[in-house]
Length: 625
Image (cartoon, rainbow, N blue to C red; front, top):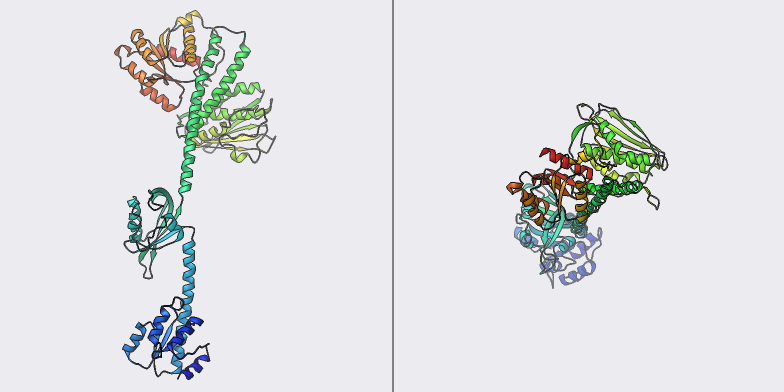
């Protein structure tokens, strides 16, 4: 029988024939066969013992075994299959049946090998994937598989076969567990970004804050039912912390700019006040020198204002007070503001703006700032005696404003970043054009807040530039208002005696800066007012009780008790109920103005104070009272 079978099988396959079970096991270990055909009844090691030995060997446990036996019947067949045989053939059998059974087992074995190789490749991909991946099974979300990256994330702890809640007991985010259970129940994936999770990354260590981008993906079985959930996560902790550090640094920078602007305002105030005093006292022999000092001081004021505007924009504190106004009126004010620079550099300015019919809904002061910044920019980068044009036209529902010059132009490399903060076209070493590179950044921010756009173009170096602003037009036409006067420090003639006597007031002035205090007191006294100057809140309260001033000008940044608290104290005293209060501060934001009004001040002045503006306000308050 053995000889017959050997000859039959050798016709189709390579065959190793042995006479007993022990020899069969040794041959199998040596040759790693694709199939073992064994009789049940063999010396030394029967068929059942051979199957057990093969299954106990890691290299041979999946080799299929076909048992041949003379024992017929269902029970014998079941016994053979239960022992681990892949097939059971009862003697006598036909050669055809034997060959068919062997061919079938070989095909199955090859299929299993392909499946095993595919599974091993997938396992390698799973384990080496750059994302952290875990598979949770069943209603209790038991860990079925985790890859290397996931194991690293959870501190290399052994979670296999452990429910998710139990394995990560230190996680306080109950919503995370609920979300996984919802994915399992609903079959809908969940996606999250930069989710904060507290994990114990080292044995015995305290849980640490981690951040993950993740997908919780439901997995369906062959019946279409969701019985698993895959967690795919990316550790973005370093990115989140870097972004947080950058935001902190950015806030610190904005706060520094705001504080820098505040601190720079204080020394500018006494400089401008001293210049005004010189004029009021009739010291005219140094007019040229005074003009130089004033021009440079005003330039510093503009730089400080730019710094403060940038800080407000970055902090989201930039507010607009919009109204309907003719564009021509705004252009007039912008031109008046820039006229000294245009005259100094002998530029020729051409205006082409309709006198009426182009109404915009804008913050007049801020939009004048946009136009004056664009004109100033054109003047700075155009050689003396150059040409500048400002044109405006209607294009559908928009106003299109173009500022054109024949100056140095803009390089192709600079155009994309022209409106960024602190960016300027390259200057010579003397930096004759000056500036901080903030003007155009402020222009863009203000225009965007108005719902408009601003763009720049240039044909290249030495060929001039064009800045175009597009603004929505309002749906109404209004009468053209008279241009508003532009604040300035033009020379003022010494006041006549009859003017000094008019509107004389008793004024209490409180400021801890002695230079500001002495300068403003001198200016107000030259205007004929009775001024009492003190530098601390306690003295101010005692003086107010005995003096009952008509007007109190209070610095907000006072030591010990700030100006708001001092105002509240003054307002609480019945005999000072009619005293009018003016706030004086280096903080000039609209929020500061509203706070001053809420504290009982009737007016608010931002440093550096224009003596003319202060005098006008004092006279106005005197008329009201």
